[in-house]
Image (cartoon, rainbow, N blue to C red; front, side, top):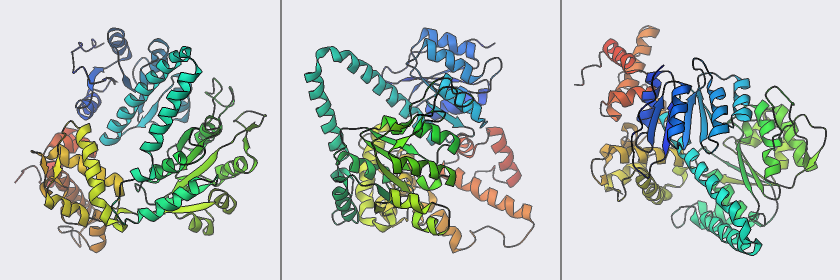
Length: 493
């Protein structure tokens, strides 16, 4: 057994994250992804991790599920009992639903991440986990303040509600004067005053969740909860339990009662993102809840009344899905009391510059590089690009540029190749075969050509940093080197 990693003093303001995995390469990959934002400790076994937890406070623990001796869920169940304030995340290459349910019920798992994980997603998940821990600690302190009496708490609650309303006001949705978003926000502000269900359409990454929050905080339900669920993120078997709750013993792994999100949102708003990804069987159950205003937790015979306003969103055209028979017509009319459409960035090019400036301020602060600014050439590239991934893609591109910039000014050289050329990879593909792709040859020869193009683009984007390229493409350094030699790319020139 490996001894636990010696404790090293890190920056006082960085939360500590403990990585537990019996595979050294996996530990190294996670460390490289997280070590700029967090203080990192590593352990190759549950026993070594237990020793570290006994000696130092840890904000978040990421643990592999399949380890010799003790599974990740078994170990994190012990962590929940001994160090309940530590946020627990499981990483696994397996999708066994019983493991997921056991992790949620027994170990109080915050998130279940599947391998191979994406560095940006892993980093954002840990950031969110740290923020959730801070909020939980704040709530614990607030509970102590109950002794101060109801009048003081009412004042504080109104202050917090005012702050939330200001933060999610329609005017805080970044846009330029005369933007197409002006009409969307004006319509949404009128709808917010009435208890109507609203369906928000638009491509992924256009800000549908932000608009939904603005509707909630401008509505009479603003002092109630705002609860969000991404219907595409979990399978139907778990989605029903997550939304409607379940009773102890309702299914294998249900060791205790679970209150669903609809009950938690009583008196407030439920936002069902990507509702178009649900199955017809689940749509029937959701329709019943919306029609009758009551639900039955899984395994229960007693109906529970719920009073919620439903906001829904989908990147699909649900009216077309109804005509194609993939979405129930009766549910569509139940959730689409009014409809709004979020335009893509290419439909609101005038907004790209103010949104980019706003995102740059956020990203530069998060990455510890305040004072960054755009050069004129960089802004021209951003405005001329089509942004198929919309605001989410724009944020990722800005984060990459900030990380690669040598000075305080972002130039076009910090941007990816496709963006500098002013067209997306999909547009380039639609225009014809990329340069260098053979028009003839065997299938293997053509596949090798495509693989070489992907590797070359990643190498150029990361300035031939093979560690970053291997991490992005889910390869080991040895595996990457083997491919480069086979494809004749090892020589940087």
